[in-house]
Length: 95
Image: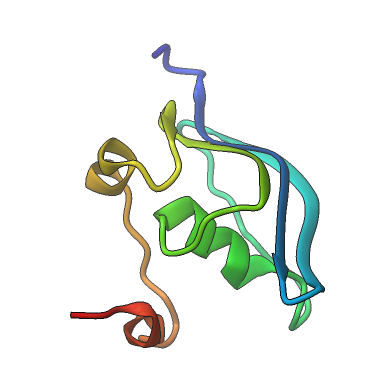
């Protein structure tokens, strides 16, 4: 990858939960070396998008890449990291 390539690339990402559209066609790109703020009101889909990028949940449609690797893949998980405000990932984990 070149220095100016995308660190995160999201195209037309969609996720639904029991008929509720959590994210609808979200697209954005974060270039290597950029600072990126993911802001929005409660319910805008920020957490769902991050959960897709980290592989906690799967998108219903669209594409997401982390450093050129499919979001949620082993390679993407090995090179990525998230520091959430609250440790709420434990609800999604199982033995």
